[in-house]
Image (cartoon, rainbow, N blue to C red):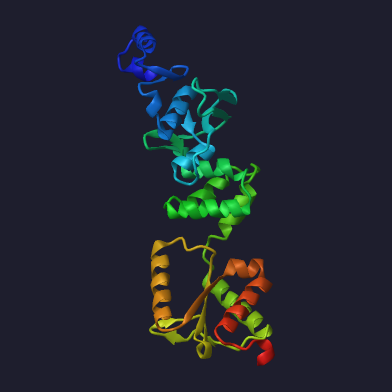
Amino acid sequence: MFQLTGAGVSKDSVTARVRSGRLTAIHNGVYTASPRQITALGRAMAAVLAAGPGAFLSHQSAAWLLKLDRAKPVIHVSKRGGMNRTLEPFDGYGKVIVHSTRRLEQYEVTRAAGIPVTNFIRTTIDLAGGMNRDELESYLADADRERLLQLKRLETELGHWSGRRGIALLRKTLGDWHPATEEEMLVFQKEFLQALVAAGAPRPQVDPLIDGCLIDLLFPEYMAMFELDGHAFHRDPATQTRDAARDRNNTLLGYQVNRFTRQEFRDNRAETIRQALALLEARGWPGPEGN
């Protein structure tokens, strides 16, 4: 309604258009001229308008708008002050849950597709309490794909939300997104190699140069190479591109390229080494009993 009156349309004129069918009410004070053609984006905007000035799409609905989740039948909106409430649209589609929050700063919100929405960082904080570790990792991977992930800013903001549900798990999950330091990588390589040899694997060449590139562990007799990554996910597109090109080139040279991450080795060392041995056996290694 306030958009129409702000454009110079009187309340009486709005009422007349509703009565004549030129406008259809979706919520109190929210109308559409094409009720049969209203899109998911239209529903989201209607929900924000129905919640009143200062409202923003949030939670799962914000994640959907930011391309981090699928559309849900319930629309979530946040605004400062007031009370938590539920709005039922007149046509029965898209129930709206309005979250009352004590803080919702200007730097925590943005616009996407013309709709006021909480930004990636605030959306992540709002959702963290309802996610487990696997869900958080998947969510962060999607954010990375959409070029939304801002690790330093997100970690800094977490300091303002200590004690909130999900923040501790989110902080721990984010910690695994940092690439290991050079010293940590040397320790990882040493421990991986020791565990591999202790399990009966042949001793590989360490850091050989193949076609101008250093390889972490090379088994030349089996044309297999193990590359050790310092974090669970490649966040840097340039790194992704470089590693993909290297892997393709080494494959063309006849090598089997296998990547292992520091996180998976740390979380389940026995299973990681078991898979490494199986990969060598697939390349013709007779196994520890055949040595």
